[in-house]
Length: 206
Image (cartoon, rainbow, N blue to C red):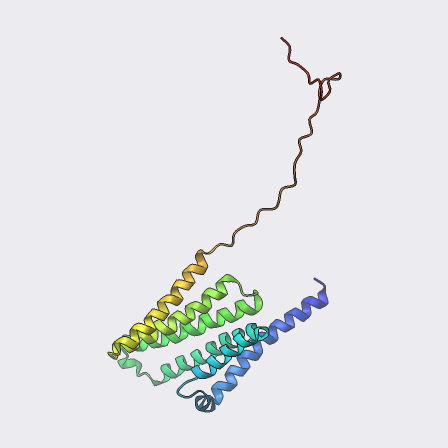
């Protein structure tokens, strides 16, 4: 690849990384507006972005990158909010689990975004995205279970375990190796005897 093309690709990837993060940071700053747009949470906004990605395949990669980095920033914001609101001198294990869950979601979704932009959607980036999904649903499923919302908790836990199964499936999947086609080989018979020919092959000594 030419130096000019390499530099352009590098700047393209930098913009694809920085712009979604800046957009997510701006959304966090005005999250009350996003709250009004998305109802009770930003889930409606994320759903709209997924629908756009399905309807317009050309935007699918950009929407996925925006979702990954957006979820990363929002998760860090939720984690920091939890850190500030918890009285750590009287904290229980669920408080620590809440903070660790949001940190894990932020880490794996950010890692998925980096893999999508800089490593052309490598396998580990897909696994990271599914890990973030699994952490979200398993964590919220456990929270709903503790609040005695059993049916809803089972549904969330089931979705989380399916996502975890996707992580294992992607890790175990191997692309079938395509063997290069062998050229048709014709044995070239070398007649070692000077007076022999294909019609009269040499005979062994008796």
